[in-house]
Image (cartoon, rainbow, N blue to C red; front, side):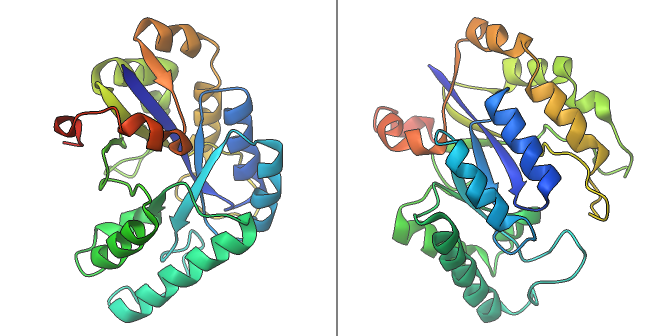
Length: 237
């Protein structure tokens, strides 16, 4: 069986992003979200989760804010470690529970001097961490790449279907996405594309397509039971 987690990053970044993520969950294929606890709409996001009990919510660690202000000095490993744990505690305060998974804004957890801090935290709480668990990470669903231009065709329904058909393998895959609606005053290099993603992720044709591809939607909260059935050879490539 092919299992798919559709995870929306940047939950809590703005009211419009919150609204887009919840719309893509209630009316589309989003099963999970990653919360930025130090952003303006984080408390609103946590409150909205009460209306979405089936939405898995993890921690989207933010060291490089969307607003362009550095949260920490990325070269300072110890400062980053402390901020990582502070954001983890803040998540628990907002959500009154542990996150279902761990990842980071702009993939800062990939930096060699920061990765050990993330791995230690994930291991201590037995959390799946992006690119370091038995869940394969698929990050190709994105409408703006190295040329700096917007490419809405890359996040259209046809493109998503081709991606799911060719990239989702046996076992469990996480597809990251960034749905949302544009708020006045919210600065981001990825803005209009978010609304395109909402429409794509809510397209009614996706349900039958996933069924035809024998892909089952799950959330991160479902992993503990599922992964016990997967052989070790199916760990991420």
